[in-house]
Length: 165
Image (tube, rainbow, N blue to C red; front, side, top):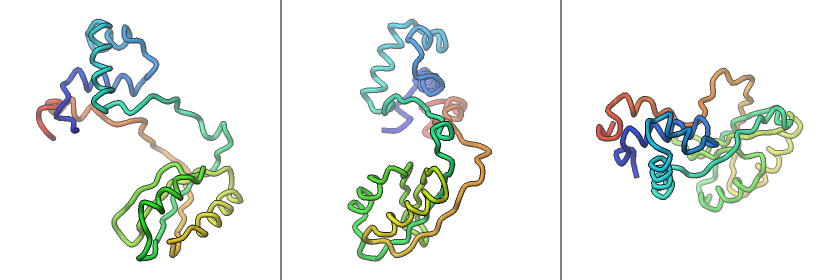
C-alpha cells in the first residue's frame, strides 16, 4: 500500500493521530472538519488498511535510566543467514532498531543502554553471536533534533494522495 490510496482528510487524520493518539473522535473531527461518526469510520478503515500500525506511549528514556544511545555498525561473515541473525539480535533488550544497509557493514543497530559499562556488556554479548566478523560503535553525545512520527505535511502540500510524489 502507498500514500496514493489516501486523500487529504486521511492524511490530516493520520497527522492528528500522530500528534495525540489519545484524541477522541470528536477532537479529531473538530481538527479536520468532520463529525465523530465519520472520523470513527475513517480511522477504522485506516487501521484495517494497515496505515495505522498501532498506538503507543512515548516514554522518556532518560527518566527511566537510559543514559546512552549508540549506533553499532555490524560487519557480518559471508555465510551469515540474515533472517536468523536479525531474529537473534532483535531479542537483545538494548536493541531499539535494526537497519539492513548498503555499504561495508551489513547492519546498523540503534542501541539504548544505561551506561558505558552496560554498553560494554552489550557489545560482548553481541560479538558472541554467530556471523559477526566485527563491529564499530558510535556513541551519541546529544540529539539536537529527533522527529516524532512521520512528516505528512509535504504529502498534504503536494496535492495529497493523488500526485504520487
